[in-house]
Image 1: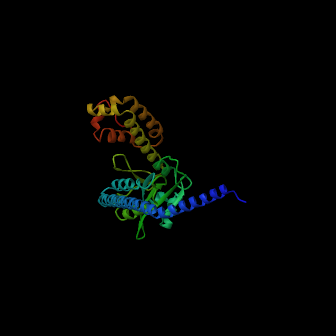
Image 2 (image 1 turned 90 degrees about the vertical axis):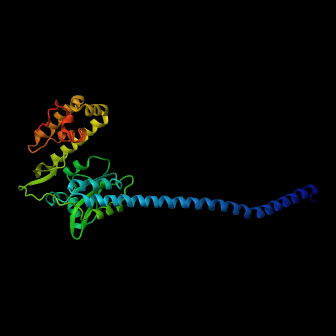
Image 3 (image 1 turned 60 degrees about the horizontal axis):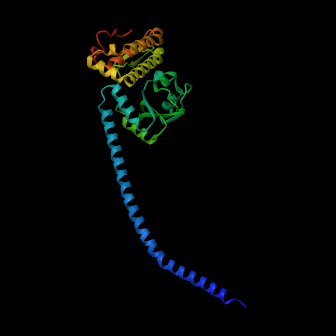
Length: 305
């Protein structure tokens, strides 16, 4: 016979369980309604903010693309056009460069030839086998192992190749849209006849300079050397640069660094290439002296060639 105490315990548990379930059944709809309303309101607010951000981003992108299109259309010199396209492409890639069409040089670059033949974007390894030493010198050394070559192409005509490396913020669609905007806006290059075997490079002043095709790689490397070394002066010796500009005696305040770089430039480039120009001197005057040679000071010895 069961103990009365045990029966009471069992009945009490059953009644408490039933009461708890009843309370839950009554409370759950109210709680769900309250939480649902709160989360719904929060979600609506969140969605509105997202929509606002999307609209702002779209307007900002449209504004940038519009500005780029205007710059490309108004460019009178090839250098201006290249700079506008390169700067716009920087928003969609970790590294970008622009190569105006030069079929005579591209025939020896397998990846460029593929772009010419397919008239479509090409993804390729970033090495001398697919590109060339001159191209690699121009784009610089990075951790990227592959790159994208986007044709600036339309109506059967190729104007240029847009080079881009993947990385944070990379957007192939954005790059191809830029290429589409750029097609047909490229200024005509200088058409003066050149001797056989010569090509035109743009020096640090923006002027066209004919050089032997065999020396092109050396000229590209020399220009890159000049840009990097002058940028280092600006970065590491900012106070001396500012003082030298105020006193119009930049050479005096940066003599040791300038002389060391001049010697290295002469040894690496001038002594090894008869057609070489003093790109280091041009970059000093252009970037440090703001195109005013007098700001270098009367003590400055000038170009080495």
